[in-house]
Structure formats: C-alpha cells, structure tokens
Amino acid sequence: MNWLTVILFAAGTAVLTAVFLIVPIFENTSFERMGVTFEAWIFFAIIIMANCKTPLDSAVKTFVFFLISQPLIYLLQVPFSSMGWGLFGYYRIWFIWTIATFPMAFVGWYIKRKNWISLLILAPILFSLTNDYIGGFQHAWKHFPYMIVMAVFCLGQVLIYLYTFTENVWQKILGFVIPLAAIIIMLLVRPSVDISGTEFLPDNPILTESATVVVEDGENISISIESTGQDSVIRVQAKKLGSTGFVIQDGDNEYRYTVEIYEDDAGYNQIRITPENGQ
Image 1 (cartoon, one colour):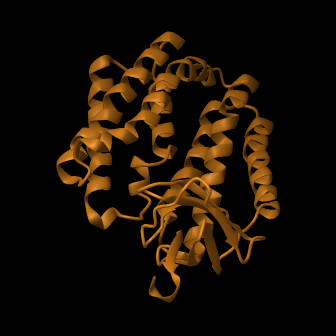
Image 2 (cartoon, rainbow, N blue to C red; image 1 turned 45 degrees about the vertical axis):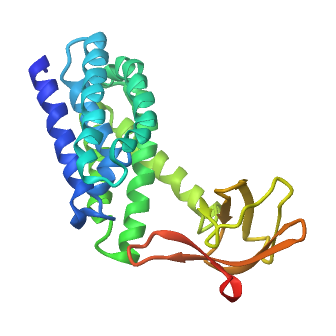
C-alpha cells in the first residue's frame, strides 16, 4: 500500500464516519458506532498491515492513517455540533490510541506469517470482536434491526481473519471457539444489567463536601457524589432495571429523589433522576 492510498483511505474513512455521526438518521445505529467504538477501525488497520512490506512500514502507515483520520472526523463535525471546537475534547482518547497504533501495527504485521504466533497476535482482536458480535446479536434479538449490521460485520471479521491469517485447521477452530466460550461464560456470571454513569441533579442543589447519600435499594443500585458546588454531580451504578428512592443529606438540608434505570426504544440502558414531590 503506497502513501497516496493511505492518505486517501484516511480521508475517505474520516468523511464517511463524520456523515454517520452528523446525519440524524444514523443515530443509535450500527453505522454511528464507527465514530465511537473500535470494530471498524480494527478492520481498517488490518487492511493496512496486511498490505505493507515490513513491520516498520506497517507501523508508520497505520500511525499516519489514524493521525489523519481521527482529528479530521472531529474537524468535519465542528460546524454541525453545539459544542463547536469543544468537541475536540473527546479526541484525547483517540490520540492516545493513535500513538499506540505504532507498536501495535509493528507487531500486528506478523499475522501475515500464518502460524501460531499469528493466532496469538490476533487473540485480543478475536476476543473483542466476539464480545461485540454476541452483544450485537443479543441486542438485535430484542430490538431488531438495531445492531444487526454491527453484529454481522464483527462476526464476518472473525471468520475472515481466521481464514486469511491461519493455515492449520486447529488454529481456525481454537481461534473461533475459545473467545466464544469465554464470552458466553462471562455473560453467564456477570449481571444482566451493568450500567455506570454520571448525572446532574435536576433541581441543581449546591452540595457541600459533607453531603452523604442513602439509597433505598442499596443492593442493586449504588449512588455516590461525584462533585459538589455549583455543578453537583452524582455517579449511579446499577445491576438491574427498575427505580428506587434516594436521599442526600447535607447538614440541615435534605434532598429526596427517585432514580430510574430503564431501557429506551433503541435498547440502550438509561438513567433518569426526578426530584420527589416536584422539588
């Protein structure tokens, strides 16, 4: 893969991703995930690595691909976002991953050897994609057709990588079965709902450092104070859907709320907080 192809590839994927993030019809779809999660970018990176002549060539070109594509995605969104240039605050995590692509693509080039080392290098990717396609099919089962494209795309990647970068039939079988079995076991032992997020309190109380929280259903929902002052924020962690009450005690002041953990029409878990008695 020559440099012109890498640059055009980076620009093209950035424009496509920006369209998926800007146009409302793609909201909460598999296509929007291209600008949020890694599965599409794993695919793009492997295309580059598989078409480079040396490990260093792979590392440099993959790094440059991400160095161009990721900030360009944010730049294209700026005119359409209420955050304006503040949108680039989210680029920090992608910049860290961009730096990480250099050593990862250097090592990743060796998947072309098509041996057990190739399978070992692919293992983290196979686990990640297996987790994605299982989650995607689960989501689509309850909220069809949401996430069905993502699920098929990730399953397809697993099959393509095992077909392309392994030769031994046992490598192909183990590369498919071990991640699948591991993810299924994890699903069986972890809570059916595992949500964690921060929320502003709806009536904007000004809390002090001495504020404490008491939750009625403390077994399935935990709430802590994330920040105090003018912008008082709480952190909510939940293991099941439902609602419960909680009280914030701050000296002589008492604030009562109801927190609801629910699933929206697209199948995503959400947090809603309302003050009791219309406070």
